[in-house]
Length: 333
Ligand SMILES: [Zn+2]
Ligand SMILES: [Zn+2]
Image 1 (spheres, protein in one colour):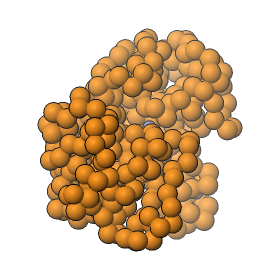
Image 2 (cartoon, protein in one colour):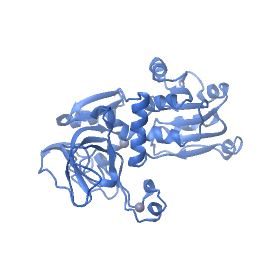
Image 3 (cartoon, protein in one colour):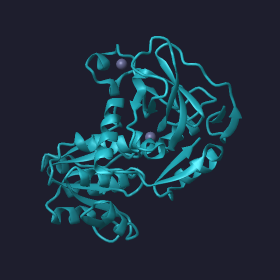
């Protein structure tokens, strides 16, 4: 089979031939049909604590189960299945015993803990599997398994009610999905972008207001609308996020999904008056992914995608990294 692997931290992609792997007990093998290229793949490409190389990235995987390991009864050969960021959990740690699998201390991540979807066949543990509905194509489903679930799951747990003002900061891979999910969830959506370029697109995706944070003070603009109940911060810029905190209404929440390493700046006063909060959100479990897919199926939410063949993994990855992709890059096998 053909595999796009990272030979060592920071090294260029290699396209190599490997033996097709065999699933162990509690695992299945997926014949990969599509795999999204996510910004978090930089962790595989550039290095992550404990990662072993060579490693195959990819955690937006959709395919067909073509082999099941011993003891697997819930999944069958020929069934469509996917794997997202949540690549497995131990079921025994304190978090798992509370049913909080997403915070498992031994959580596995597809494409980091084991080889992911940048290959023609991958092996995954059954607790990582996501059933794919018939009506969604492979390339449509793939980006919903990380970018989609992250924005949908964050929003549905945000505490915002239908009719509330929800701002989506950043109109990119995450943000263009966040706007759609927020709109279809019944929120009044304010999209916040830098520059006028994405105004028409934001409206088309379901925003009722577009705020150009280069031309205006976005926090003030949000206050003119009554203040945001939730600001879903998708663009990985702590500075941009910090500038928006004053745009939160009473009991408003800055919900952080864009991963920057710089600190967010906020004063206690900004949080105390108005009882504002800042919360981070990471993805979700496979059943959350299935909820995401069902919601997308019901409402027509889809990622805008650019596709590349697996052989062009390096090009696909570079395209994602450039920030110029409109908006998710998906590889087909
Ligand atoms: Zn991802
Ligand atoms: Zn656990």
